[in-house]
Image (cartoon, rainbow, N blue to C red; front, side):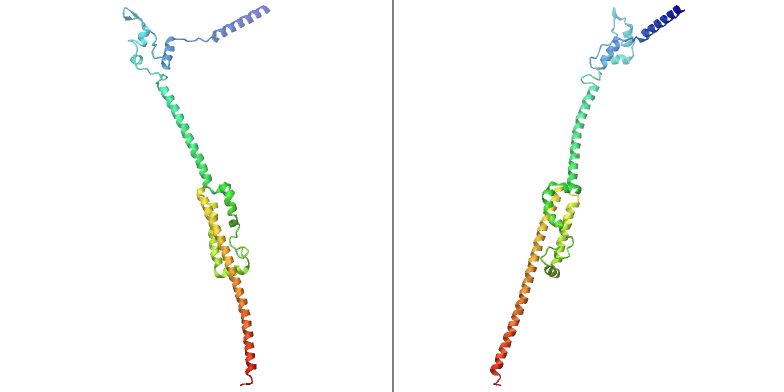
Length: 274
């Protein structure tokens, strides 16, 4: 019994190995005509039209050649064999032309990309120069105009007393209020405040923005000069008015006393004569 089982097992293993050997083999096809056709389709050569013709006494005796390329072959086969070199990968082939054109297109695409990137970068820079969102970070603003225009920014929007107008005292303020000096300065201040606000909040080219800064700065300096001039003139006017009042008072007292003395003298001198 054991001997029969061993024989069955041995036969089964032998059959398995034989099956693996049969089905495991890969037959490699090496047809010269197919290889020649593959060469014709790439870059090696145009030709090698297999199978080759054989002639016996001038008569074509290779039936395979006659049916593929010869007189028994379809007309399109003979046109293909006798026609122009149509290898797509030859030096001037269609595929080579496509690859060259593709390379040109890639180079052109790189140039366009560089131009687009440059335009994008320039647009971002222009946007940074145009928009009012980045004005606070501009170096020229930070290092110069911010400091120079700070007094204007800190000046009261609608001053209502001499301290807000930065005058010496309330008498000067009241006198300027009466003679129209305050009204004139209010108009100048409103224009400067409006120009300063527009230069900080409106979108405009960087150069134009700094021109507005500079115009505002010049206007602020002129405003300060006018304010100081009004202050000094009104202060001088009040001083003269005070001196004039004092002079009139003292002069009036002297004249009254002189007249009284003259009258008394005349009365004493002539009171017995009339």
